[in-house]
Length: 266
Picture 1 (tube, rainbow, N blue to C red):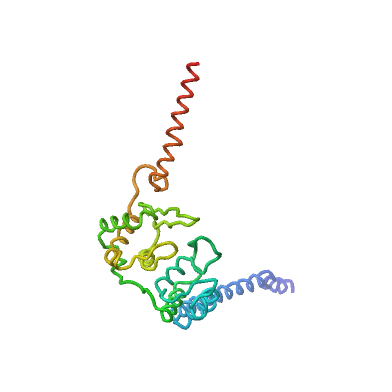
Picture 2: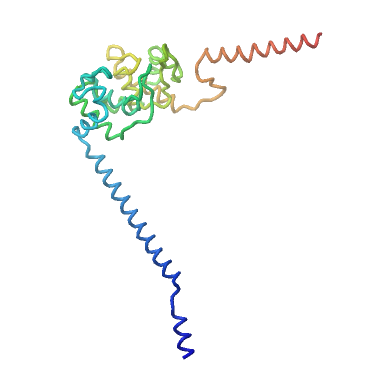
């Protein structure tokens, strides 16, 4: 009898072991479910992203843009008409986060875009289908293989007075400013020249041909990729920051030396 009881007691499973087994099973089941859900969600997102149409763009426009620009794109007291704007300007404004506008001000600031790339293209296609305007350029215009020297000269003549010769941006009047171009994409450089957003003038073919625009884009892309060597850039603001530096530190040092010499002589 004693041996039989010992054998039975030795064969029993601890309640903790059963609980641990159940917990492990639940964890494995949860992990498998989470992985499957993520995979299905990624597939659904990819499918939705690749199936956006002009109709989808219209729905997105009505939900996010029509309040200011009107359902018919003819504008309202809160926003201008979009007739003649086209897909190039629409993509520029949405991709740079300037639109939708958060608040009225001297100028729409650049920020993180509210929409995905596919949503932006869908809205742009809808605008183009309803109110045609400037469209995307040929790929060669954006390839960065143009004449860099000629582009740099054109930039100095046509753009540097606002964007700075180093493309670092600069202040304008009444709280406005020309943004830095140190991280701007080739497409958005072209779009800015063609559509003239904010305070920027429109550079049509009579001002700058597509080849000229290609050269300017190539020069800016080259400048973005070049390594800055030697000295302090001082914000790349040219004579303004350089003169301020000399005034504060150069003349300040001379005044300090003069005071020290006078004190020593006395």
